[in-house]
Picture 1 (cartoon, rainbow, N blue to C red):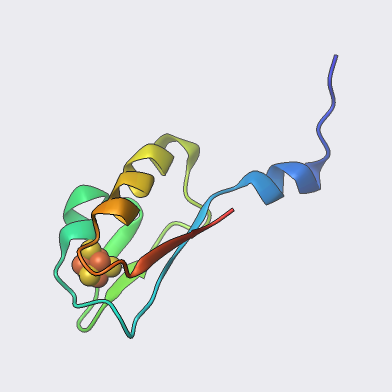
Picture 2 (picture 1 turned 30 degrees about the vertical axis):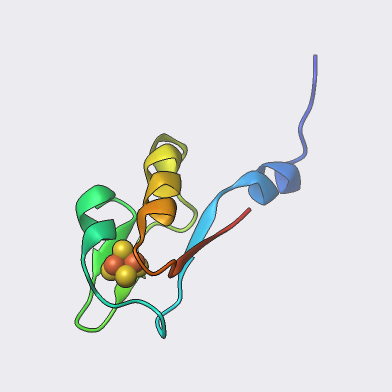
Length: 75
Ligand code: SF4
């Protein structure tokens, strides 16, 4: 049996960050992954921190698809 310390689980959680200076508020991330991103008046906001495991794949694809590279992943 393998035990995993709680802090290891926390360190493994995926987090995403939107660079508000770079974001153009195009809305792609909200359309593609609405459980994680919400479009505000001037830039997208992250509404799931950390990203739920079930949404990680969609979030990663959204990071790649952001047209200006404004989203980064922190794990
Ligand atoms: S896809 Fe990128 S540029 Fe468009 S709203 Fe989301 S973070 Fe901003």
